[in-house]
Amino acid sequence: MNISFKSCDDYFTFYKNDSLIKVTENQPLLAINLKHAELILKDLRKKELKKDPFSILGLSMFASSIDKKQFTEIVITLLKNIDFDLLLFRYFDDKRLVKLMNQKYNPYIQGFNKIFNIKLTTTEDLIKNINCTLDKKLFKKFILKLNNFYLTALFKLSGISKSVILSYFLLEQKIGVQEFFRLINLENKFQQNLWGYVEEQKKIDQYYLSTLKKISFFLKNVN
Image 1 (cartoon, rainbow, N blue to C red):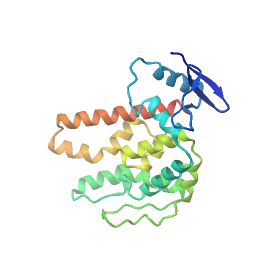
Image 2 (cartoon, one colour):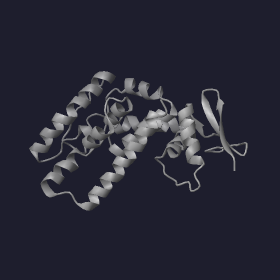
Image 3 (cartoon, helix red, strand yellow):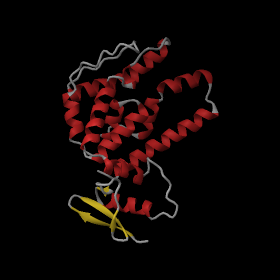
Image 4 (cartoon, one colour):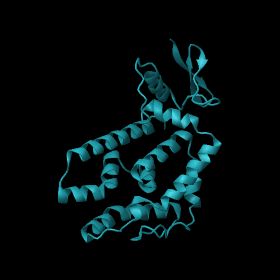
């Protein structure tokens, strides 16, 4: 079995025995640069190809499969999810935790607000959505300019972290994976310091940190 790739306009396409490899009926598997293409090729040539949605191949397949309709749906989802961003909620009784959240999260909220001329505010109410009517047109404009690969990274990161805000800063390389992981686990870590760190939670944390590193690696190779 011969697997190869060829340069095609702004992308690289892949072939199996001279037949174009597709991710959907109409859309081929794509790479955005030579290094990216080589990494995909390496995955495709593995004897036992494991279906890992967060591998270079898995994320590239997802990105390559995004059509206009799906692109629009992802944009809508991201804009909606800002309203429920992890960083915005302060519904905890422990004042020490709230103080820690204010200290760690507020600079990112303020930075995001400044960049996109938006007025996201924190809330103690889980039900009442106080941010849903805000104008997000500048952030929408930012998303619409993303290619499918960067959109995939932002979408996957925000799905794992429940924070579009932090995902944006990671996408823009203004924050590293380790700090990103610490911030999205701020509440968990606070509770663990009080009640202990069980083995099961360690395994969960290892899985999510590993996944975030894979997405970060993908990002570094599609720029």
